[in-house]
Length: 100
Image (cartoon, rainbow, N blue to C red):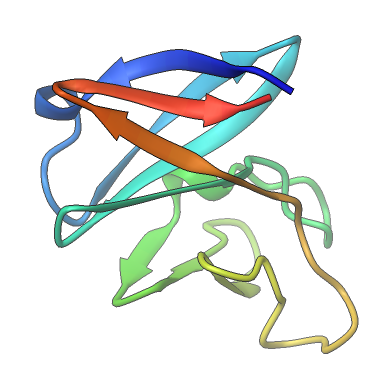
């Protein structure tokens, strides 16, 4: 798999997110205190946009029904055994790249 440029570091302030599209997939890119994480943008419950959710430390809460996901593992805290896909992230200079 190749790494794809999805954004620049300065486009995502600390403790915020951005929705990006890679290979026809909607992904949520998060900047948590300067560390970047990427997960699927679709909540497993009812498809809510995780990239628009509330961020707390290394977790995001789906804005539709409150399901909470760990940004490092993709695990759902409300329903163990359910998870969203995570993606490897690399920063090269100002570029954020993800493995896709």
